[in-house]
Image 1 (cartoon, rainbow, N blue to C red):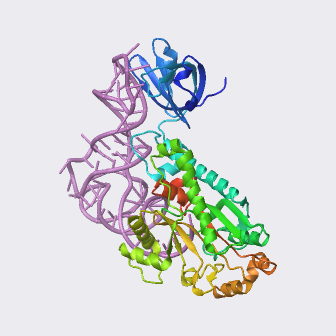
Image 2: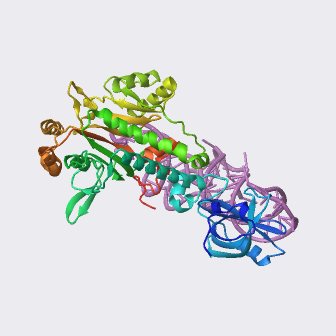
Image 3: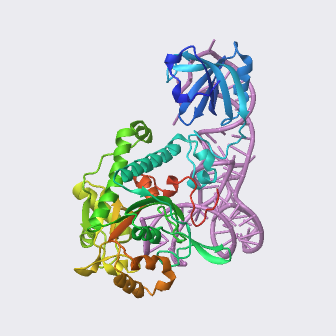
Amino acid sequence: MRYIRTNEISAEMDGKEVKIGGWLQESRNLGGISFGIIRDRYGTVQVTVRKKESPDLAKIIGEANRESVLIVTGRVSKSDKTPRGFEIIPNSIVIDSSAQSPLPLGVVDRVSAELDTRLNNRFIDLRKENVERIFEVKSEMLFATRSYLRSIGFIEVQTPKIAAVGAEGGATLFKLDYFGKTAYLAQSPQLYKQNLMGAGFDKVFEIAPAFRAEASDTVRHLAEFTSLDVEMSFIESSEDVMDVAQGITFESMKHLAEKCKPLLEKCGIEIELPKLPFRRISYSEAIELANSEGAKIRSGEDLGTEGEKALGTAVKSNWNEELYFITDFPTELKKATFYAMRKDDNPELTTYFDLDFRGQEIVSGGQREHRLDKLLAQMKENNLDPERFGFYIEAFKYGMPPHGGFGYGVERFVQKLLDLTNIREAILYPRDRLRLMP
RNA sequence: GCCCCGGUAGUGUAGUGGCCUAUCAUCCAAGCCUGUCGAGUUUGGGACUCGGGUCCGAAUCCCGACCGGGGCGCCA
């Protein structure tokens, strides 16, 4: 007999024999009757045992520790005394895999646990319905993203995660021994996806881990995160690139709002689709807006965390919007981004933008400098040796189209969308400065 | 890297030098109750991170170690 999932059973199946497997969420032992609640990823069902009729089965339910895996075969019985309108009257209950007691973490206890405790026991934490849902949302978001990008002609690629050079300096690179040579974990597919523009792959995207050895210990940083990278050729300006970042965001939200209603209901959130196009706010306007909400940022200064948050508040109160671009970043602030194209008519400004969601950066990108002489000059400003970037530079010598792209923080999007206080909740097994296990 | 803060049963907490034989909830165990569904009810169980110090006396004060949380810088 094949297993049936809890969501596949209904009151209409009254009388039918079924086999279910799941975790014993709780058992209630009353005078002459016992209830066992069996849970799988889809929900719960109640198994009801009358002690007089089945003393042996009542004993098994009573003896099984919470969270043990039970296999129950029995008959579906229509009942108006249960929330789902039916229950299972078992003819067999097997404790297939017993759970030790006490549990390191309760799945349905009426006390919360600290994130650290939860992460230390992540496999149990993930049994919680509201925790598991986060990853369903993430999965749906990536599904919608792939569908959208493919529908507008992008192909999905995979670039190396072990590399000899990083895109931005060495401070944030994880060093590793590569057959006696020094290599690094990729902090970004930046150089490779640009290289692919030279190869003629005019629209590519990649969804892959990126590694940052930043000593950033915050609720929005991870040492390993999922980077959604896009790169595209023959663009007129960074506006073309922004449209795609906007499209991914919008289509993901639309997919969730329209195709995943039960999931969103379970998450307790409602998605209000953002207006298109997303508001474009220039860097200098952003400072004024942030300052109007109490930030104290001088012109030319970086917005900083405080400024970003204040800007989010300002945009919300002025226009009731939560997704917006910050454009025209000053060259002074993007100096380290040697591949960023500066505006031809005003070299003090770059073509770079951020996409912020409720006061937090989730996307960063822009048009790249594809003209070799300018690129080399910008590398020189950063004291970077082009020799070290061999394969990257070579591609610019043999026909490189105008192009641009961005990096999109998948966990950051999920975090903001679901209003999670810590980004670690948006990744199964977070890696941060202190955590390498599990 | 810098700045703040914390570590008490399995989980989450109360506790600011003697009233601590350490609070409450959850949890666990046993009992009662034929329909629970945050079940109810009775009884019971379980903890001061480690090392040093101050003091008549330390969960409480000091030092160190280890572990963790938040903020900033930076970024996705």
